[in-house]
Image (cartoon, rainbow, N blue to C red; front, top):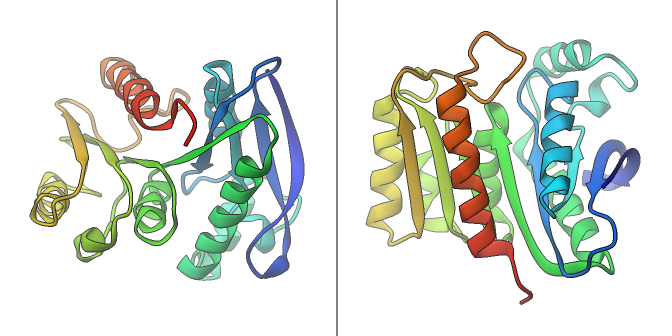
Length: 231
């Protein structure tokens, strides 16, 4: 695989930084857009993008905080984004659409693109699944995901949550699941005892090995089912 920082045209025609990781010497590649967590466009999330590439998925992670502090360290850019009131949903959707278009335009693409997000990126993945034409979406502990968007969800959804989390809490997850079920959406939720927020984060105290290992197993199965093979 090859991984590199690139410049892409995002929402409003803005030039923003992104991270592209792609398999080599293969064709019919599915694509994945990674929406990073609130701590930002950091080393650990770039490692996630590279992991997808190792497993055969061309991957783009747009730096959603780039506009607020170009060239700054991830933590500083995240702080600047928070001080500005956070990333507007319309801007997020423009950046996500640009990443989807970039992946589908690659000559090696099979035409299918999924999206995955963590923490704030999980909420943004939920919004993306309700607003853009993607083929699959993975919501990893996306706090403040709005159940009222469930009728608009356009693709299958995989949800991965910790039962010790408070954002989203187990009751919040219940509400999301009930809304998806009531609207006849295709979804699969997995909840992990002993896991709280950010249980995928290998470089943080919240990392939970067993939950993360099973979560990756669910991701490979889900994306394998919905993204492998051409349209």
